[in-house]
Image: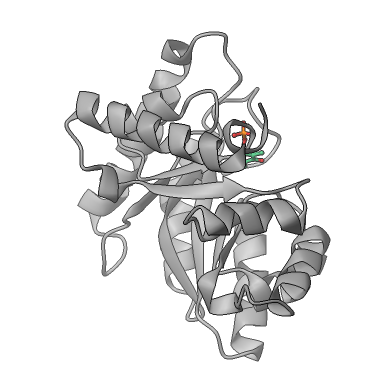
Length: 231
Ligand SMILES: *Cc1c(COP(=O)(O)O)cnc(C)c1O
């Protein structure tokens, strides 16, 4: 079932790309494996996927350890933190996550920088933007993103790769289009202001209910859970 679901998601990504005149290879599919077991992750790996999103550090650490004891070697799998990260979990998080997508405050970024320095790592992150008041509790306000980007870009053990957002739940994906567009425009603005020495590349937006719209609006990283694990 997971294999078939993944094939279907890939087809939908390709269709959205055709519609938007984009290259499907430019879209990274992150499997959101929160609340799913290691066996399900292995099935997704067998179907050719290798990047997984988790929203709780403890749960991710357990799966990370379990998978490292099997033939599913660590370098094969990349782990993404997509849930709210508490500062007291940062030490564990920087040990296992390749990309922390949910950096939602300067305070959290400072803590990540400190813990990454301890283990001599440059931690890749995304800044999470609260594009709509009702979508999530967490995220930087759009009006503070420029300032925070400036501050965080000065931290030596953090590498900002782009922006992430969660759209509000809507009965019709057209309703969330403006939120995706807003994130895309924020990214363009940061890049055109040249706040950092390099361009932000990653735009992580789009989940099971809205990823096609997100792709049409420029997403290059979709985070999919239900469409892969549910019937
Ligand atoms: C759960 C979750 C997803 C996946 O959502 P689905 O609707 O199951 O595809 C993506 N991003 C974040 C931040 C999540 O918490």
